[in-house]
Length: 257
Image 1 (cartoon, rainbow, N blue to C red):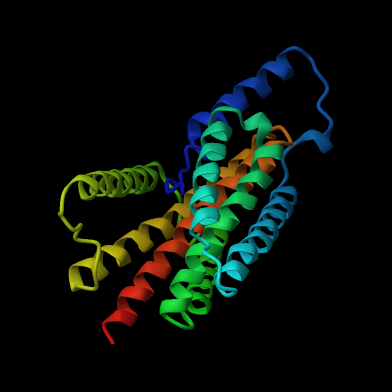
Image 2 (cartoon, helix red, strand yellow):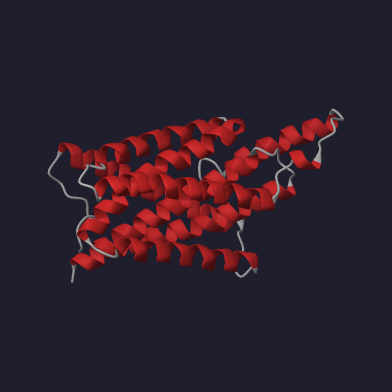
């Protein structure tokens, strides 16, 4: 899983580098057809395509789990391959038209697997997590569209710093727990653990504003057409992260009942 939105992806550096290349093209008097430029509608369409691929793929491991087969192997494999594709895309955004669908396909295997595992233990949790993710997305989109929330440089700095802190904490906790008997504080259903989950969900949601902002800027700067896939992939990464965190929070709340 890739949990950094302001993703390695929708970073100012990446978009700025494309802006530079665009400026160079203009300087060299190259004619750029409008159909070769990034558009908002194109990015929305690409996001919808990736979402459909992810949903279709997730049904595979979901079906396996509810037919007596172990979904862990495709789930783990999907997570690893998905992460690899994210890293490659971060350095080669030109390949996003090919890598983004692949990411959605393999990440779908991961999502289907963990969703089935949570559902078997806590019936009804998947529907609630999907609903919570969708509502959060729509609320954030509305707040951004009507400029109720403005993405300033200070806003970006706080969100990015918080995201990196979360990623670092998760990584260190995972490594330490592998070699010791220490149980990370975000495990279990204690109030501290629940509070951490709520905080992470808030930061994941705030990352959506960064994604919206970078996509909008990409359109305004007339980025190349392949950046539609790049932007859509970045947005999907944030939504996957948000969904997984909702699953974890709801499972903690359910286990307290």
